[in-house]
Length: 319
Image 1 (cartoon, helix red, strand yellow):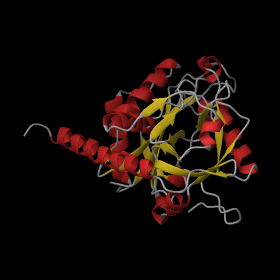
Image 2 (cartoon, rainbow, N blue to C red):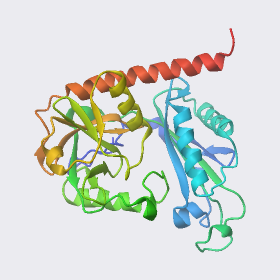
Image 3 (spheres, rainbow, N blue to C red):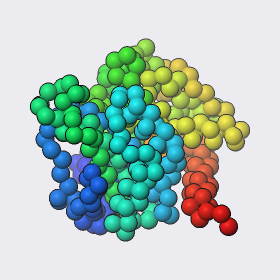
Image 4 (cartoon, helix red, strand yellow):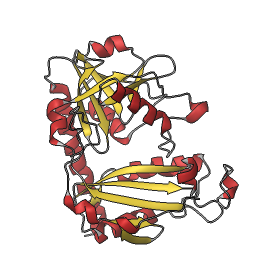
C-alpha cells in the first residue's frame, strides 16, 4: 500500500501491494514487453506536451466493465482533438485482451489505456510535427483499493486551483494534460489533506483533483452540474442508479456551505467505485454513518455483475 508512513494519508488510488506487479507485461504499439523494457521516445508528443487521451478500466471475470461507455468517451475525445486512434474499438479490445492474457489476468485488474499523437520530428508544439502515427500504451496491474479507504474515508481540502471553462481546457477531456489537477493535489497535500476539492469558475463545488464528488443531504444525492468536471463513467452510473431506484438525485450548483453540512459525501471513479469522504477542510462530514452511499455501492456492484454477465452472453454468441 502506498500510504505515507508519516502523515497516514490515503488517496483514492491507493491499492494493496501485489508482488505480481513487479513483473507485468506492458503493451507498446503492438508489442508486449516486460515493464522494465517498456519505453517511448523522448520525442513523443505525450511526454513532450501532454498531447494525448487516456482511459481507466477495470477487469472483472475476464470482461472490462462498461467497456462501451469508456470507448464512447475515448473515441469522442480523440475525435474532438483530431487524434487518430489508428484502430476501431474492436482493435482496442483485442489489444486489451492480448495484454491481459500475457499477464494471466482475469479479475481485480486496473488498466490505464493511453494514446498520444506520437513521435515528433522536432521538439516543438505544432501537431503536424507528429508524423509517424499515434503511440498506444496499455498498463495493467493487479489492483484492489486499500482496505483503509472504506473504513477511514478521504480527507479533502478546498484548493484555489479550479477546473476551468470549456474554452480554456475542457474538463470533459480525459487528457494527458493534468497539470491543473496535479497542482490541486499538491495544494491539498500542503494543507494536510489527502486530495483537493476543486471549485468551478463561479465558486461552486465541482470535483476533486482525481474523482467526481457527491454529497447527501436529507436523503437527496447532489453532484455538480457537470459543466466543468470530467463526466465520469462511474459518475453517470451512480446518477442513473439513483434515478432507477427511487433515490432523489440532482445535478446542480451548490456551495461549500451545503457541502460542509452534508450528511454524507463520497467520491466516484473507475478504480475505487465509491469512496467515502470523512472530512472537508477539517470539518467532519455527518456522523460517520453512510446508509445512502452503502446502498449505492451495493447497487453499483450489482450493476457490474449485470454488465459482465451481458458481455459473457454476447461473447458466447447464439445458442
